[in-house]
Amino acid sequence: MSTVCFLLLFFFRDDPRVSAVQRGAIDGVALAASLVLAPVDAWDRLGSVFESRSSLQEEVLRLQQENRVLKGQSQRLGSLLAENARYKALLNSARDIGDDLIAAQITSLSPDPARHIVMLDKGVNDGVADGQPVLGAEGLIGQVTSSGNRNSRVVLITDSAHALPVQVNRSGLRAIAEGSGSIDRLIIRHLPATTDIRVGDLLVTSGLGGRFPHGYPVARITEVLILEGDAFATVFAEPSSLLDRGRYVLVVMWGDRQREGAP
Amino acid sequence: MIERTQALWVIYVSLGVALVTMLLPLPLEWRMLRPDFVALALFYWVLALPHHVGVTTAFGLGLAQDLIEGAPLGISCFGLMVATLVLLFSYQRIRQFDGLQQSLVMLALMGLSSGIEGWLRTSIDLPTLPLTGLLGLAMSMLCWIPTRHVCRQLRRHYGVV
Image 1: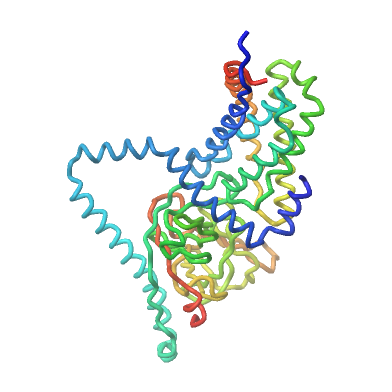
Image 2 (image 1 turned 90 degrees about the vertical axis):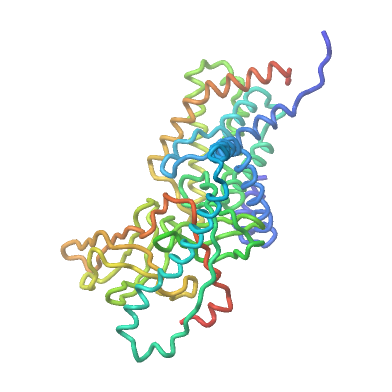
């Protein structure tokens, strides 16, 4: 049996049959979690029944969702403006990709305390696929790692197994921002100590690697650490979105077709 | 005395309930304090009924745990299996211990299983818990006596032998 264990771990970890089982389990786990939470939800609903303004609430919800979609779409504006100023002449060739967004809700956290993984209430049936970027209200929060039919798992950018290519919005400097395992901190290692990077700089996705579209805000630099005599600086940044607050997120429909056309 | 049918389902239902406690929502930074009821329930049943619950059950539970966590399949199996095996070798002695001594044994067993899990995680480049994760082990240790009490009442009430 331990042989089975090691075979599963070291040889069949990415086997399509194994991941099919895992995908199937996602929906089951989400269902079980919602059953566990059912009393809490029922209490919430009871409260809203007594308010007897359900139609108004629906309207507010719809507007909020719309507002969120608009916010998500305008996130790219800041970096596009900066880019515009620098590369006015070249911009003609840059293709504008109108990203489609799906509003989703975070339903639960992974029970594994070493990871920053959350569960969303949208899955393959809604158009979610592996690798799609996920946005919070203020910026990028993570990417979809596996998706069931009605639910999917998202790994946050602060997970210590996650890293993403970023760019300093002010200077255009490219770097890799790694998750630190703590929810309010990203780390950039191995930047030359003479690099032009300051506290307060905005990091945006650079679009390199083709996983994330270019130009979504990611984090703000909080600390630049250069030890005397060291050749490299270590830079700490705080994610723009509060990753442990808020339930609503946007999944960017960023398919293979668009990736091919990406810069 | 009336002959009762074996109520083995009680074992599996209690293990299932232990799995469900993994799904109870906790704030992000507090998750490491969650007592590991799955391991505790498993260890209780191994200690009480070693002829029914053993390494195979540990394997199945480990798989279920991985599916719930979304971790690579098998990562928490091996640790649970080894700890169960240790318990199977020495259950007669551990049964004689008092509550505190048993709690310490449980701490050691859970340390063993989570240590093995951490080692497997490192070997495939998955993040492991920082040292504060040991707090979770301490919480689990404190929960041994209540878990034992509940499981024992269940076992006696349903006459599982």
